[in-house]
Image (cartoon, rainbow, N blue to C red; front, side, top):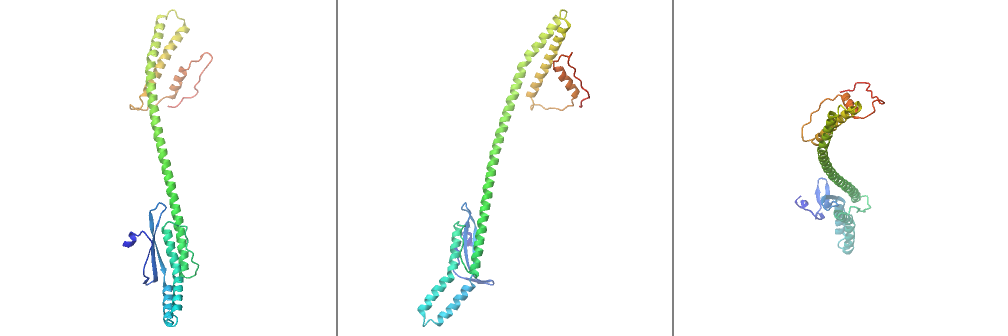
Amino acid sequence: MAELAKLDHTMVDKEINADKWGVWLSGYAPFYRSDGQMEGILGIDIAATKVVSHERRFLWIALGVFAATVPLASILGWLAGRKLAAPIVRLTVGSERIAGGDLNHRVDIQSNDEVGILSKAFNRMTQTLQMTIMVRDKEITNRKKTENALEILNKELESTVQQLSQANRELKEFAYVAAHDLKSPVRAIGSLAGMISNDCHDILNEQSKKQLDMLVQRTERMNEFINGILRYATVGHETLQKEKIDISDVVKEAINQVVVPKETVEIIIEDDLPI
């Protein structure tokens, strides 16, 4: 376990191990993600029962004919050993290539024994591992794209809020300045209309008196509008209180603000409006 914790290369046991499950040759290889980080360690136990059996049987045969057929026995032993070891070598090479990041590699062993079954399982495992890493990498990419899009959106929202706050401040400042500048001339017009009405009351006809009175009323309403603009400019700096409003009064006030020829136009409110 200490060696596996710091394993950075393919490692195969030098000896065959036997336990209650059978006889095995064990190999280990680290495998890595696409970004170069180690994902885990691939461990393979190759059943070596038949290998050991073949070796023992061959040993007895070789001992029996050793005296007469030493050259032939040596050649046959070398060929048999090579044939038996070739699948294991291919599996070891495959493990090294996968550990190096080549997840497209497949082990081609055409046999029906334990080694052939192991090679098929090895290929299925490699394919599953490849698909898992591809799906994970795709999820990571999509998550990063989403995070980047959210970051851009947050920055745009923050910029928009700042722009709206700036525009709102400028609008309130403009409303305050404009209302403040309009109060004096409107007050002067109202005062002048009142003075004309008082000084010329005896020489004006009824129509002129009504028009002067209407002018005074209009300047008073205009002054109320300006005061409303000033109150709007201070919204947010004072505590506002809600109060109930009779909509009928609001409509009547709106009608009074509209200059219409009363002889030809009649405005009727059929029903009482709500509070």
